[in-house]
Amino acid sequence: MRAALAFLFLAASAQAQAPRVPVIIDTDIGTGIGDAFALGLALGSHEIDVRGVTAVGADTKKRAMLLCRFLTMTGRRHVRVAAGDGKQPDRPITDLEKYHYHPDPLFGRTTKPDDKPAVAFLFERIKAQPGQVTLVALGPLTNVAALLAAHPDARKLLRRIIVLEENSKLDPEAGTRVRESGVPLVLIREKACAGLALDAAGVKRVFAPGTPLTRNIEALHQMWDGEGVPLAKALAVALCFDESFVKATKLERMSVVTSVKAKEFAKWYADRMGSLVAPGKRPSKLVEPGEMPHRVHVAEDFDNDVERFWWMSGKAELKLLPPGSKRACRAVLTHDFDDLLMPSRVMDKAVIFNPVPGPPMGRNTRLSFRYWIKGTGTLRVQIYSLTNGYHRHLVVDKLPQGEWRHAAVDMTEARRPDGTGGPLSEGERIDDVQFYADADAELIIDDVVLFDAAGPGEKRPFPKRVVYCAGFDTGDKVKHWPGDFAIVRDKGFYWHAAGAVENKATGEPWIRLHMRGERPLGGPAKVSFRHLLTGGAAMRVKLVHAATKAEHVVELKGLAEGKWAATEAAFATKQGDRPDEIHFLPGKGATLLVDDVLLHE
Image 1: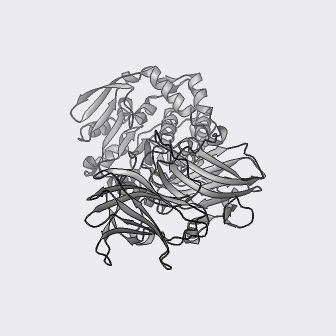
Image 2: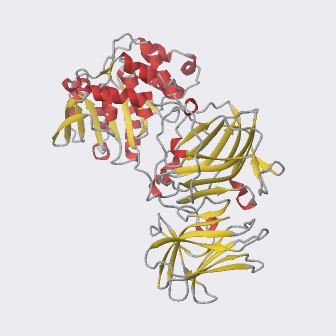
Image 3: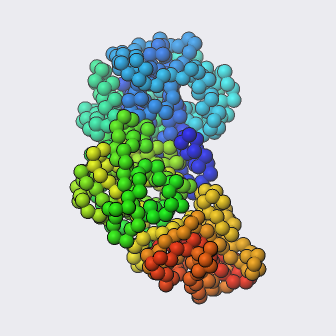
């Protein structure tokens, strides 16, 4: 379900990060060690979305089971595997075969190969993303040639095929058919890869992180008796997203790699894999929240039952509260929400909420919150990416215990549990915000604000408390953004905006934003927002309680016209005021777009 949502949101978001390259890998893993290092690079690179792996070269079923164990043990159960069928080239399976003779695959603890043979499997996935998939052939071209013969449409559906010249010789007939197929090819010359290998120091660097991914590559390496690690196959994977290490000759529908910066690539590979350190081994430091955020994406103070359906783990805390708070959220036991890379049987104490409908992030994502912790000084902060379909987290330690503290973290430091995944990117859609502590610890969380850090020159202080925020970029108009206005698509400061409509009672334009329930205030408050105003330089902003008609009004004058600008209205509200609507009234004859509305103290 999450994978489907991630795909839909990626397609929908005009500001989504540059999408990862969809890649399918066809491999004869089990014969040499290069395939394991190449597959590790593919799984460890956030630029690549591995859409499947197929096994080529007899015995394909053994190779497929080896792949299933590798993917399961590295937390990639979602990456499917298929075995090639029909006549396959005889390829020696070395001692690496022992990797699949283990209770994990033998007793059904790992995934199993797909029921479809490799050719049908490949075509299904290529057809699902026409013109996008890169097929990386790391073994004989038997499966690839069979695909193009059985499904001629695949020739137009593939983005390109990356081929190693030495592998095309393992099934010469298949190699010829692939070269003559008309599919765009990248051909890596065998001579270009002379000397392209990882030395002992580089191998040690790759294994240093000790994550499930690097450990399983190391396990295969220990079963191998060769010297050095050939990197030609890893280069084929790298070319999916980085061509800076090669020189190539462009021919018709073919790019031929004629030379490789061997030393530079080997160092790059070792550095990239060696940097995949689990977040817990390199704890993050707390940061200052800074000045007024450039943009607030999510706010949750747990005071309002309107958004209680967002709470996915935790219970209301009414006694042990920070000053000024009416309610916080106490952690309860749960399995980790990361079902890919975190241990499925381990339980932690967690506070988790779902900021429906999943906003797009900025360039400098930060998370501010208040916490009370006891029994441990370590806290894990985790976030789910709708865009990419996986969780990232960071760890902070040595926290003071038994007292309420304010904290902020830099979420661009978050990574997947094995160090992969890359940083949060601008436009990336996120979902659950999660806080974890040890199962025997106590944890209470309050006043969570997910925001983009203040821009240059910002002087306003960080809000004391964020009461409500609205971005209009995602979600259902009726459910998430009720009121009288229009969602104006692709015309907002970032993406979408709220546009003024006619108030039928007055005949004048207005934006009536209903906040889905009362928002209790503790004193003076402000409404900060961005606006695009034409036909006037003034507007009124109201905080309204719809049922009682109680309202606070601020007149704004001298506003910028015809361009997006930021402003705020300061209200003389007092403790006990509970507005549930914000009105923007630009006056007769004016037009108004509003974005990034923030009610805060």
